[in-house]
Image 1 (cartoon, one colour):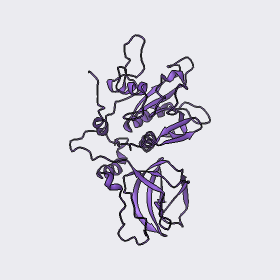
Image 2: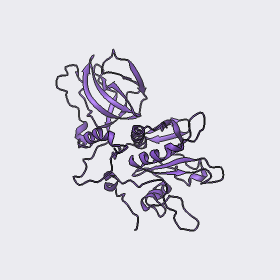
Image 3: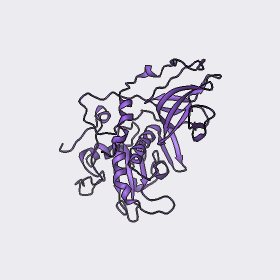
Image 4: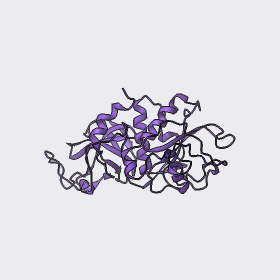
Length: 314
C-alpha cells in the first residue's frame, strides 16, 4: 500500500466538496435547537482559523463534560474534519490542528461571537486528474503567525506545513515540524547564505536532528522531503557544509504559489536553477545547474492551475 494511501478517504471527501464564497454564509443545522443567533459557517473539509481573541480548548468529545485534549492559539490555522454536533448550547466541530484531532465549539451563541472562521476554498479535482495521492490545495490566507522567537510564517505556509506533518506522520515520521523550524519567512538579510529566499513569505528551514540530543535523524529525511513536496513545497536537503563551511544540515522549503515570495525564493521554483526544471535551486558560478537529488518532483492540480508545471526539458 502507498505510504500515503491511508489518508485517501479523508482527502477524497474533502476534494468532493467544491467551495465558493457563498459556502461560508451562515446556515442553520437541522435538529440543532441550541444554535440561537449563531448559525454555523463551517463545513467538513474547510480550512479555518481561530478568531476568538483568546486560546480555545480542544476536547475528546463534542460536549463540555469531555476531557480537554489541548488548546489552539488565537489566529492559528486548522482543518475541519467532521461535524457539526450540538451539545450544551454549542455547535461543535472535529478539528485537525497540527495533526492532532479534537472537538471545539464554533462560538458563543449567547454573545453571538464566533471563535472559528472558514478560510480558503477547495477545488474539485478534474475528472482525468493524475495527481499523486496526498495533494491538497492550501488556503490563500496571509495572516502572519509567530511560531517561535525567531520564526514568523503566514497561515498559507503553516497550513501546508501541517498538511506535510499529517502525510509524514501517517508513515511513522517522528519529527514535529512546527518545533523544528530553524528559520521562517519575512526575515530579510538575517542569513547571508539564504540568498534572500527568506526575505518574503513562503520560506522555511527545518532541522532534521532530534531536539535536545542533536542526533541526525537520517532515516527521516527522505519521507519528510516527499511529504513536504506533496504538500506543495519545493523542498531540498541542504547537507552539512553545502552552503558554506560549517553550515548545518537541514531541509530548505519554498511554498509554491505563495503570493509573498521574495524574487530569490520564486527563482528557486521555476527559475534557471529551479525545482520545476529538475535542479537543486542553488545558483552556480559556472552557470550550469546541478540536478535535484532530493527526491521525486511532485505536481498537483492546484499548482498547474496557478501556472506551475513540470518545466524539465524546456
